[in-house]
Amino acid sequence: MIKETSRQVASTVFEGMTSLSAVIESALSGKNDRRITEVLYDKSKAQSKAKEIAYLRRMAEKLDFTVTEADAAEIDDLATGNSHGGIIARCTERTIPPLTGESLPEAGFVTMIEGIEDPYNFGYALRSIYAAGADAVILTPRNWMSAAGVVCRSSAGTSELLPLFVSEPADAVHIAKSAGYKVVCAGIRDSVSAFDADLTRPIFLIVGGEKRGISRAVLDLADEVVRLDYGRPFRGSLSAASAASILAYEVLRQNR
Image 1 (cartoon, helix red, strand yellow):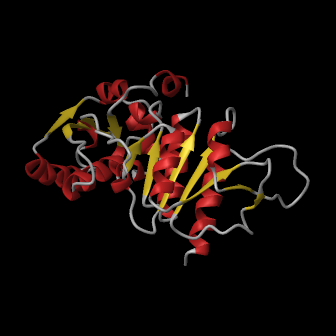
Image 2: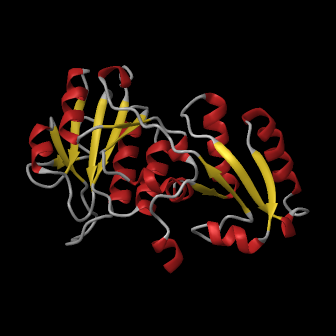
Image 3: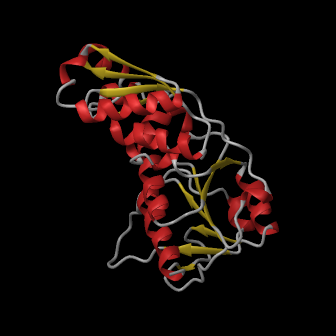
């Protein structure tokens, strides 16, 4: 855990087949411009990972990257975690375009998570948001995508499959409203239960992090503030990743 904490920022080393498969899928489909430049695999696992290595060699011919055997120690030194299974990849940076009105699909579901303090939690939130059917995620200029390998691993590859855009939160609200979206923020003050609110598309859902939450300026711009009701008296709060998951699935439920 100490290793992961010290290595979680500014890394484009992707670990494990789930992450590598997501980068490959996004490259083949043109979802984003990140590319693998080199795959390294543990030579002591060449036999047990023969199927995966053969797949990577086929993709290397299509996408122009190298596949190289390496010592386990070299892979462990480059990796931030311990779940890589002996396969990692060096990748390029990803361009995240600015949000415009044209970025938003008609009758879409887009989200923004403002203020998550940890790239792992950010990845966990993206995983649920992707599974719930969100069309895109809007990032603030200060976001965790510099730790792309960590985010990809914790999101089970979905960070590379989701369309991502960048915007200041207040600007994103104005753009979404101009495109006909209802802007809904998660909060407590002057709120209604998320289970009673109208969360039908097109909707722009904003969830704040545990420490800082959503800025007052953005809350004041929202069309509605929604809260998550608890099943018993509880003075605490859910994690941002948990709140984002529940709200995203309530959007899914209301738009079935």
